[in-house]
Length: 615
Image 1 (cartoon, one colour):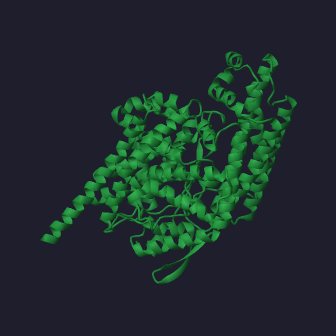
Image 2 (cartoon, helix red, strand yellow):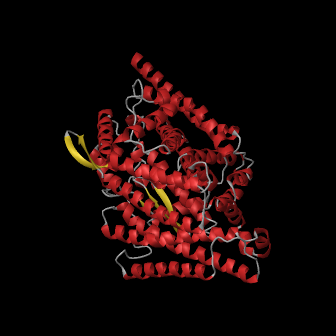
């Protein structure tokens, strides 16, 4: 595809509708509402103070306490939603243009309210732990509606320090998170890279440079890859210092709260146990040789002895069909419709109502995500490229929006979905689109679609495990001192070797993934959840294939309940045992089937070529 054509497609991609729910950040409507939201948070603080809502030894459950509990919980849910909508709206400007100083200033000021709300949640959890939970559940319908959350709070509060210490930790965490997140987002979104394209040196955004990874010209892919590494190298010292600071605080806070490590804390927050993680990891490590088969088959197809990092996204067909946005939009709606009209209507709304920002541009962060916005609406950010892989990524983010649609009936506390389950609907919807693409496809088209599917599952399984191993090793070393840029690079390369093995050229990998990937700066151990979510969704898809109508009756209810039960109990609704490696192996068998199919198609093309050469 010529670069001029790529630019033409990009110019027609949609932007978010920034006039919803306000005309803009400078509008009187926004100013009035943000002040009202800030005031609402301050009034909630006063309400907590007036009722002494904080951790106590024991609180007698009388009628007054019962009424206070129901009123406090109701107000917290209402005000959380207001603050959340306001935050997502402001961040929509920051994430699409980090140079917009007004948005950065407003977000920085609004973080005080976010910090206050976080402190109130800590106080609320401590107060709930001081109540007689069984009596509370017996006497209050509101409590029964939040039973799982309340039980979890009582279990988790043993890992709270004193109220004063939690307050200090929360303030420092919020401030530190704001600084570190802002630091990474500013660096990444404003990073420009010079690459020679068509004999001319061009200054490009990181998003544009990464887009070249899909280009059929291998030499151009290599130059883009080398330029990207050079750009991260220039910022590596600052990013390493930021990452050291973040992980140091996470380790310290986990220890103070009685956890052996940040990972133990993350498992509890994700509603899974160590047995589940061990079963998952056992199956994942068994699968790496299969993914290496895929990578080796792709290398043969491209006529290479081994893939380099910059070949992972290379097109596998010389004349692969282009997937402009309009085509992707139509195809996704059609495929969602094969599952249900509800899913198709959700996609139609997202496209029509300006939920999606798809146009790459300077100042926009180079990630894809979907965030719940308000009620049953979401906001989706992608940097769309006209490939089938990007069609699946768009379907993936729309799957998150479908999850949010089903959660809309729940309160803010009931919607707190752990990240393990947050990838369920996204991967399920992505699979629906991939399966639709394979129907009646030619060998060349099958290769393109299978490669798109396997690119994603390689990212979700192999690459996310690489991140997990990297972070685990990094945290172990960080307890003993700060890590240099060279140490971080070596830890990343070691992790890549464990997972990619012979599938990738050892001399052409990516030692700066820790600098380029935002999740390291945003969260603790947000990596294995991708593998969990992908394989859990594939396990559900197997159930759907076997019993489609019965599955549909239960599936939306599961999505609506992801914040109201632990993962094992929700899985058991579909006769799934997530503590057994066998379940994860069965899900991986679906991916192995795609790898087998890909290898067969590669062999068939090679045979066809030999036959043609023979004639």
